[in-house]
Length: 378
Image (tube, rainbow, N blue to C red; front, top):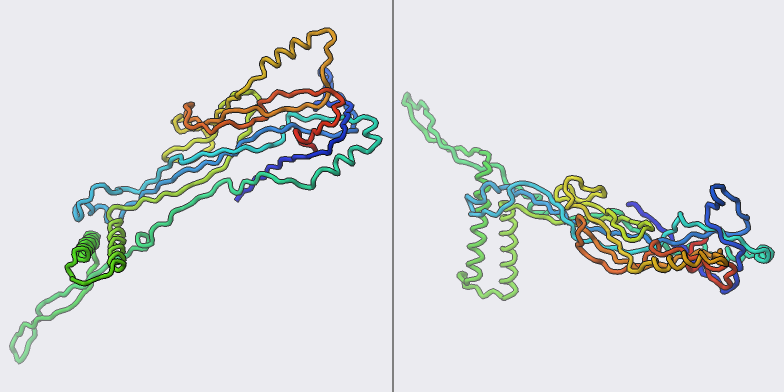
């Protein structure tokens, strides 16, 4: 069993001034040249939203009966399993979200001289817990199997029958030839047809016995409970023997867990998995039959277009000075849906997705701003 552990570090700070000197996105560059910021500070990452996809696939196994070839001849049964086969079908897909660090959005906070003098970093790190709760995936794959019925699995029949063989032996008694009949018992191997006939005869006898019970031929005053118990037992016997002719069908559930982290580029369709009737579940695309492929569709419900246009126009002003404080990113609601070959199969609902939010820059020297509530400190 594989276990995948994703830690979401949520650090809460007391209300005190951060009064940072500057916040620099890493790797720090000036044009094409790398620059080295001061080392007095700490780093943080913005969170991103990942999706946990829990997939359930039904595996149906059809098992041929031992006497299927005689089902129509002996019992008049046509709708039977004639060959062993297994096929798969998608049963259920569920999703949930959790937060992971976005390693493409790393920022260095340079502390002011006063913060360095007051040993601010020691106080900051002292507030960080040794560990935090995480999202634990118990299993990446599991299988809930249905047992093969014991009667069918362990069914056996005597493979021989005893036959009486009579023959004549000639003996010479007092110079007279006498024919003496001799009887012997010998064991003869049963044919499959004979075994099937015996099983069919037993089914017919069960039906007669059940009819006699329900019609009261025996004229015995059974209690209701006793009568129901005997009828249930006869029904069970009949089904066990009928399975030898019709075959049996078993349904198992296979469970798979996969994770997906969307990119930042807004509305998108992400391939999840494929399920084919013959091959079952696969993470790869089915190139032969596109109808076996399933995708995750994500559509942001709000857009930052107008806001970005406003900021672009604002930056053209002569006295415009861009902010240089903390970078933060708010989650944007997005509609999540399951697609089959590009067609909507099911809509799960609205989920907050951090990647779809615009990265905002706060003013420098933001007092009392608790960065730990919206970022991952390391």
